[in-house]
Structure formats: structure tokens, C-alpha cells
Image (cartoon, rainbow, N blue to C red; front, side, top):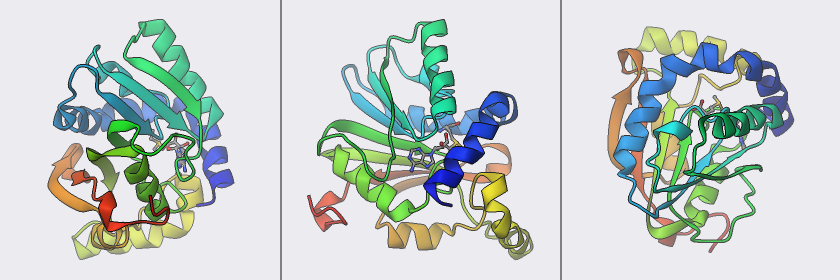
Length: 214
Ligand SMILES: C[S@@+](CC[C@H](N)C(=O)[O-])C[C@H]1O[C@@H](n2cnc3c(N)ncnc32)[C@H](O)[C@@H]1O
């Protein structure tokens, strides 16, 4: 999907997003943040923060920065921060995760929840996550990947042409994604209903080089 199409899709979704994708995807958000083992003072970046459903889950002593391309989603995240007085939310910015304005090595941990199957170029997105993460930091990714069951995966592939309307690409293969984006997986856990989504904890292997050569 192109960035304009994503913006448009989530502009439409923003109003009902929490109702449709709040509770059902919350176990995956919770699992990712538990696995992040956030320490006091940690600087954390959440790319594609959406309406900020994850923000209350971060420990209060952390500094969490969130970015999203869709103004309407971000506005809801900002309203949540104000309403729930979430002191851990240090900044929310409208920004393309594939071209971030942050300096190299800015964050201890970088997380993308339900974003890599949405972003136009998941490889570039992961390159950017690596660049802004400190060398000893870790990357966390929660996503749906093409189902290993051939019957289910055929149905997902049939749905791929409708990704613009679904708001995500149901056709992303875990194997292809980790290989192409050079994700060095340390841990892989099934999350949410039926384990249909996957949580990846990955080393920040930025020394191996990337598009940006930092
Ligand atoms: C399925 S929603 C997930 C939102 C949130 N992470 C959650 O857990 O509910 C995907 C979000 O990623 C954002 N997004 C997709 N591609 C992006 C990009 N390249 N840069 C910034 N945000 C992006 C969309 O605008 C949308 O808000």
C-alpha cells in the first residue's frame, strides 16, 4: 500500500478503531510490552502508534515516543494521553516511519505493533527502526503473517488485492519478511486469538548494514 492509501484507510478507520481492534488485539500489545522489559528511564519508540491503545501499558518511569502517518489516529492517541494523564507518553508526532526525523541511536527499544503488514515498504521500515535504535537495543514486532496452514493461506492470498480496503496486507510471509528485512529473531511467540498473530523480539543487528549505512 502507498503511504497516501494508508493515511486514507486509517482516516476512515480512526473513529471505530478502538471498538474493532482494541480488545481483540490487546493481548499482543501486552505481550510485546512485557517482553520489552522496560527499565526506568528507557527511551522507547513505538512506530505506527495509532490511537495509542498501548500507551497505558508502559511503566510510568519510561519515556515513550509514538509516531504515526495518520493525523486522525494520532489525534486520538493525544486525546488518550490527556484524558488518562499518561506521563510516560513523552511525545507523539506525525511522521513516516520509513523516513524518521530522529537521530541515529536515539532509543533503547523500538516497537511496531500491527504495522509491518501495513507499511508500504516493510524492509525500509525495519532499516529505520534499526537506525534509530541504540546498537545494544532490541526491536519488537507484532504482526499477522501468512498462515502456515495451506487452506487458510490460500484464502489470505485471495484477499491480498483488497489490502487497500482492509488496511493491511494479509499476504506477508514471515520467512520472506525476516530474510528480506534481515530481522535477527531472538524470540518468536504466537499472540492473540488462536495465536494468529506473531510477536518477534529481535537483536538490533545494525552492524550488518542497511539502506542507510549508518
Ligand atoms: C493497524 S494500525 C496499528 C495501530 C497501533 N499500533 C495498534 O496497536 O493498534 C497501523 C498503524 O500504522 C500506521 N502506519 C502505517 N504505515 C506507516 C508509516 N510508514 N509511518 C507511520 N505510520 C504508519 C497507520 O497510520 C496506522 O495507524
